[in-house]
Amino acid sequence: MPASNARSSAIAAAIILVVVAVLFLAMPRIVLALGDISPWLGYGVTVLFILGFFAIFWLRARYQRHRDGSDNAA
Image (cartoon, rainbow, N blue to C red):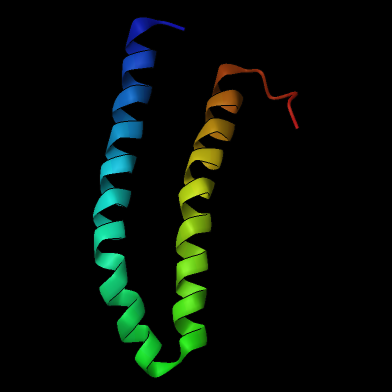
């Protein structure tokens, strides 16, 4: 892996983590506001947010594998 590619990946991961950290800080207010409407809505948004965090990195890894030509992984 070239140094510029590794640096690009590190910068992208750092940006994703910063955005997620800011959303995690705002999440209690969001969930409480939605919980006033329906507790299930608050639960659902929480679950989607947690799954979305992992999905971002999963999709990025899949894109990287496809771009690098090692697309034979499941």
